[in-house]
Amino acid sequence: MKKSFDVVVIGTGEAGSTVATRCQAAGRNVAIVDSRPFGGTCGLRGCDPKKVLVGAAEIIDRKRRMEGRGVAGDLRIDWPELIRFKATFTDPFPRQREDSFAKEGVETFHGRARFLDERSLEVGEDVLVGDHVVVASGAWPARLGIQGENHLTRSDQFLDLQELPRRIVFVGGGYIAFEFGHIAARAGATVTILHRGARPLKHFDQDLVARLMERTHDVGIDVRTGTTVTGVEGAPGNFRVTTSTDSRPEVFETDMVVHAAGRAPELDDLDLSTAGVEFDRHGIRVDSHLRSVSNPAVYAAGDAAGSGGLPETPLAEYEGGLVADNLLDGNQHTADYQGMASVVYSIPALGAVGMTEQEARAKGLSFSVKQADTSGWYSARRVAEPASMYKVLIEKDSGRILGAHLLGPEADELANLFALAIRADVRADALKHALFVYPTQASNMPWMV
Image (cartoon, rainbow, N blue to C red; front, side, top):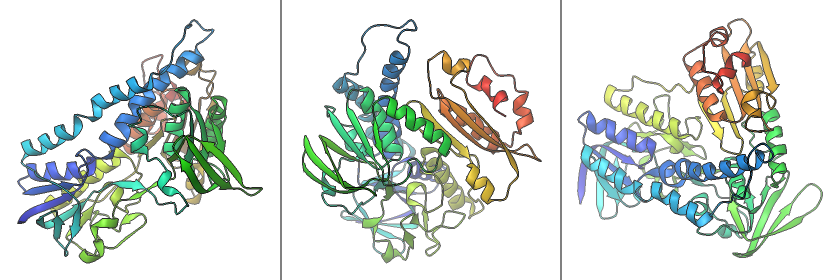
């Protein structure tokens, strides 16, 4: 059946949902399509379920840190019970999201979308024609091109494990490896991270990453850098992971191998070339309005857009809002990614906002660096966290905060405050005189600038 709409949205994550609901509320006729359960990565396969597991792992870690400081007794993670608790968040979510679309008046479709021409999509037996089409299809584990790649467990599969394997190898050294690796280690697994680069978490400050690496080793996680995985063979419970290094090949035996080597925009089956939509490995090529550079009827947002933004849920929601505004107002709005925070939910967490030292120098900026090991500060010492540091970049003439890099307890919330300061142009002098509640992590900020 052929149906016509003002806007057709592909993807029901934060980017797509934001476009659909805002356009429908403004009086447009909107359809939304997804081949998976409605809700997207964050609510079903990413941020939300992951943070539930992180919360349990943090309890275990804090108990161990506080041993000999007034806390005693046995404590462990019951993995099947934890996964059941996680499911109380994820299981109802697809129905809740679909019901919200119905309440808003957005027409929903289940199935794979494929372009038939510049503005038409085939979804099962239906053909959806949109004045505009918004691609917000998210991301998927990147193809590695190694032998036995089919044996790798995806991150969404890891989040549904009913039993935690005794030995786990992570291929790659990014967010997934450090977040899931820290969770698994606190739950009792033996964890190995194999990273082909010289250092993991390359987008974060190298000094803070080095300290996190020490803390990671201290909890028993084996991180191997300069190690390229060349193949995986065997079966669950008995895998052999072959690697090559500068010195010699090595084999790791493990019960499970997890894909943690990055994600790529999920665009392959959309047949974008039929619609005249240009794309590359970063996503659909878009202009500053997030409109396709080659097909003005198509927009992209979130992980599907090659916009240069971070693969973060707040950014996806922001880009969805920007696309909606441009659809409604005739392309009057451009993207502004200043002050976007990013956090790795390792234990402790690692946060970053704004520029790194290397980026600030590359721009020719004159700045000072304030940094310190804060493990002896009250906020870290009271919870016995040995890995706590910060680094803040401040422009010399203006006092602008160019970047903030944070490791330690509540680094995520500190990152949010620095993100606000950068985006709202709150200068260092103003932060020095802020009156924060004490004792909190925020009350450390005047000493950080």
